[in-house]
Length: 184
View 1 (cartoon, one colour):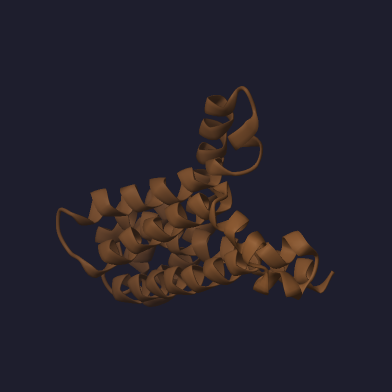
View 2 (cartoon, one colour):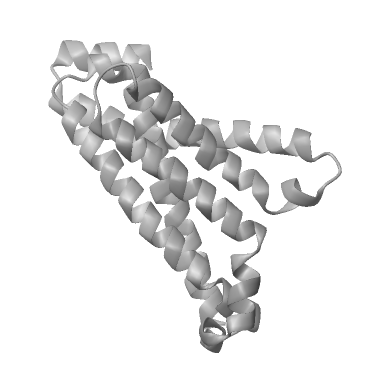
């Protein structure tokens, strides 16, 4: 029972940090030129969110074998660890981590490569969600996957825009904050 509670808490935290990192990055792609005074703060927030998300995702994945066994002893069960390592969960983890790495790279760069790297990272990590659950097994997988990815992109954008809008409204001039809000 304790393993499941910890796993659920880690999963929730992974969603928050993952969506925050991707959402802030998407916000910067769309509205970055407007947020002159707060751009570096937002890039740091997105980078921190991505790094925390990576750690939480790995911790959540390590608990998979324990969840399968029902208690923490599963952490040492090599058969269950191997089963987790060869599951769709492992593939989803790899996609999310790689997507976050691309986002972190994009956040550190300036110029033309930023947009394609950010978009590739966001699409990779959202597509990774389609590798598990109903979207991985249902006969209409292609449709469910597209709907899930579209849903996640909307959630990431809206959830991820909350911090940037707050930061922009407090750090930018009233005119720029108004421009950002209007553009949003």
